[in-house]
Each structure stands twice: as C-alpha cells, then as structure tokens.
Length: 310
Image (cartoon, rainbow, N blue to C red; front, side):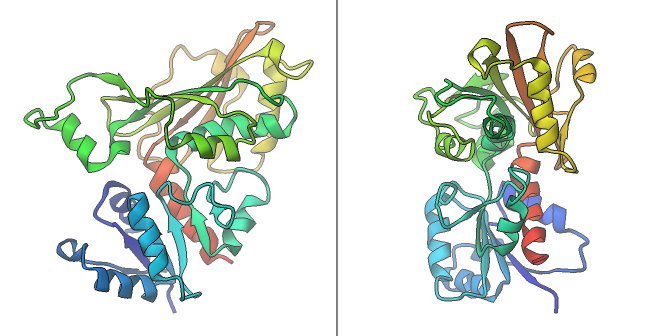
C-alpha cells in the first residue's frame, strides 16, 4: 500500500513547491484539500488523521493546532515547516547532513521540525567548526544573509511583484530584523552548538528564489593553528559522502570574482565556500542555497523520504 501524504497548507508558497517536487511520483498517495475548504477544520482533521505523513506548511499557531488534532493518533507522523518546534527537545531537527547520526534520528522520529532557510546555511557552516574544536566557546558569531523574496510568502511576493499593491516594495534590496530578535536565532544557537546567540542580520533582494548566508571569522580568535586550509578541511570531512551538500574546493573558490544568490534557484542542493587569503587574518564562510529548496520544500521532501525509508 502506498504511503498517504497530506500537505496541510498546500496552497501556500512552501506547500506548492512540495507538490511540484512530488509531481509524477507513483510511490505516494497525495491527499488534498480544495483551496475553498482550507479553513474547514473538520475536513483538515480528517485528512491529517488519514495520513501516514502530514507535512505542515502553516504559521506557528496553526501548526500547533494541527499537531493537537493528531495527538492521539500514533500512526501519523509529522514534518512541520514552521518555527513552532525547531528547538523542542522531543522533535528531531530535519537537517539530515547536520551530523552523521541525524538521518537515523529523522527516520526514527514521529515529529520532525524542518529547518529555517537562513539557519540551514548558518548551521551548515558553524556546527562542523564547533564539533572540530576550531570555533571556540564564546566566539561572537555574526551571520549576514540575503534571501529571495519568496521566503516571505504570498504577502511579500505580492508586495514585490505588484506595483499596484498599496504596500508595494520597490527597493532592490532591504534589511530587516533590525531589533536583532529574529525568530531563527534560537535554532541557530541550539543546532549550531553555540554558547552565545549569534548576531543575525537578514535581508531580502528583489529576486524570487536563492540565498547567500555569510559567517565571517577572525582567525586569531579561533583555536590555535586555525587557517583557511584547516577550516576548509573540517567542512570537507564533515560532509564527506554527502550528495546534497557540496564543499567547493579552495582553488575553485579562489578563482571566483562574485557569487550569484540565484545560482541554485530551483535546486535542492547547497554549496559551501571558504574565502580568504592564504596567510591572511580573516575568513568568510559562505553558504549558497535556494530558500525554497534545501531551505524549505526540498528539505521537507528529503525528510519525508527518510521517514518512509525507516
């Protein structure tokens, strides 16, 4: 019997992208709710409880409500793409490449919290250095990032694309999260294995999909002997054998004059770079991904496939 999958919130940006990734798959039975009935609580509850895996593409409160709807049904497994459960101790964090044991944790889990797009890039760069002992306790980490505007959902898409919208955004690039209290900071801290919350500065560009996340570091404040090469080696060792996360060789990175935030748009891959000058004082760690790919819908499908392979 084919596993039944229900995307709760399938008509939103993330849900639609998940449907695109499932199009043509004959190994799944996709349960669906008409858009006109998306607020029909009884129908939603019935579909949630009929699913083998429910993927929640909802705001935080609606995700918590959906989880409550299946609380007594141990057969239903959940992937939540909201922020609601990303630091909850009883939820598996759905970044499969985070460490070697994470794929099995996801396979075994009933509840999986899909990572945020910005944290996916930041944790991918930070966690390997923490585990390797290169990034010391208490280091003041900063994370600077730019995302495509689809990360803001349908409301921001309308603001960016419709110049007749009363809240139209005409700027080619804007900074937000100015209070430094962005909702992604707790998961960056927890899953990045950081003692101190990072200073996170997010921004949005006038392009639909794509993302660049940067973590600049002072070499003299890292573990003794840290160099461009040892940092790169730590990333290479951490992601050895992975097919989705690629650590770009240092010699290839050195030839680059720029990075295009949209390079991986439409892809579920992620590229990691280490930039700097040999013998220099600083390095800049960079993650390149699609905010709706590895940063959202692609990760959700990856996690679903892991759960179904248990």
